[in-house]
Length: 398
Image (cartoon, rainbow, N blue to C red; front, side, top):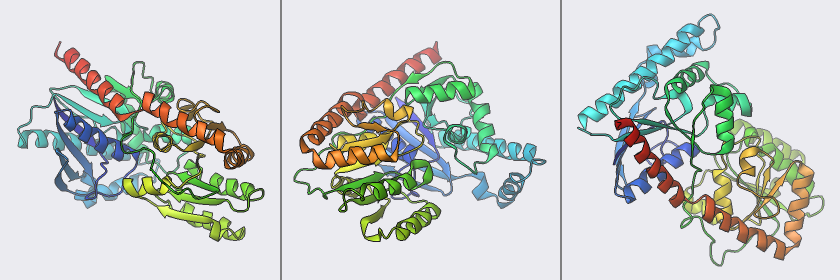
């Protein structure tokens, strides 16, 4: 197959730091190439750059807001006024029409015969695409979902407007969890999904041999932001350290600077500066080396469409403790391959138990990796994706 991936994000050193969707797109593209498929990645974002990544042809183009200061000015102006909301909507629709032109030009310029296109749900990039091939939309988590279910703030209404319009025309939709289906069904009225859980590379995320564990260490793995529970992590440390003074807290992940500053103030107020380390965003190998030092890894997020970082930690043979949200419950069977908890006190109790009961901790670790191998491996995800592509292409031709 010849596959085109349309995206805002792609994880690569030549591109800006991205979130989970960018990591997913990069892994998907590379793995499809390994399966002998031709893969092109077309990105529309802040800069223009082209390169080859492990056999994947990657091309990013500036969006209209970067190319045209006047359009960007009116976008910024109109988003602040209810009276100009109609204009704000039209500007975002205009940007999606420009995306369609970029796609058409890219295909024509490179003389491509595309079999199928995959894109993400957020921003409704595919709203005005006119193609002779089918489009697949994977629900990583739209801005509408983030705002409605996870209390994200400051999202442009134009982005949500385009998401709503785009979903009305979407025919082939992949959900990444049962919870993802429930949210998108309720918010957008979508009736039919193909569920394919995100997968991780268990040959990369695996037990690090002879790794020295930092005793009494709690690691937080994810973006340092309130939506991910960064403030809860500090509360957990404050509570746990009352019973175990040697406890430390380590943050790994991209940092929201405003949230980090607020957290540091709380840390200073409790005189815990020597107990907390911020590692920031890390490339994969550094990430694995650092996370391998953890005795416990926590995920106090208030909402996720799927727990990819959670799966990565479990594949590394770690005891994981996560908040009681639907997507985490699809991955963890509490007391078997990790723990699901509701309160800071429950986090503390499980952490102290893990610190003191080595045999129980080892049982949980072993079951954690086993469950990822069986249900959430990258190989399983790629196989299911290819099978779905083939089904969609066949139905499109008929």
